[in-house]
Length: 250
Image 1 (cartoon, rainbow, N blue to C red):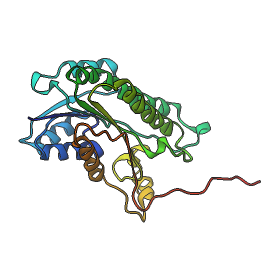
Image 2: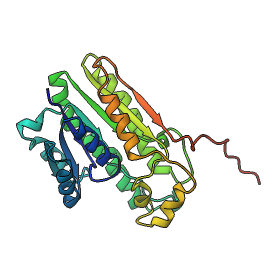
Image 3: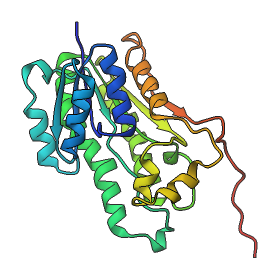
Image 4: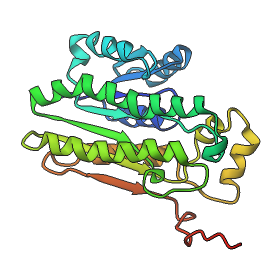
């Protein structure tokens, strides 16, 4: 029986790679994003896979609810929801940050994720099947200078995922929090607001994980036997590890 995956932020990076991975396996795909031209390009690229594209901003609660309500019968029963839409903006310390950047991260990484989850989850519970995959980050566990609000939003994703599991106990609905580390996509270009040189420095001299690596992890977690739930998965390249505690000496 053909299954359906719903992926937010599908026009680039992790989302695009996940769309390609599921399409290869013959899934139906609901792909969302803010850029209609990219959605159409991706739909054409994935042909003849059955693809439905929805252009909206996950920060808009009414648009999220309307998009899910508009799903035609063939795409309405979502088997896997991937809450992928998210971003980081800036690396300034908290006392010097742009508060607009904080609001954008909170509205996208937290509020947008909850809007889509709340719209789709009741159908999964009613059918007693489904899987919610939330894209967190190692930044939700391990702080770093300049990570302030971004790390806070991903800590929310971690705790929200765990609490979803608590609420869903007794159903067959699964929840996974996927936590990537250093991964080269458009992420750093967005963080540095288009400054490609600054973004390139983040990955200089390393072999970071890729969007394809993350897509493979998501696909694996969502195609395990139905009684198996991957609560969380932390993924870093071998070039990344943990440093000593930071100590300021006067």
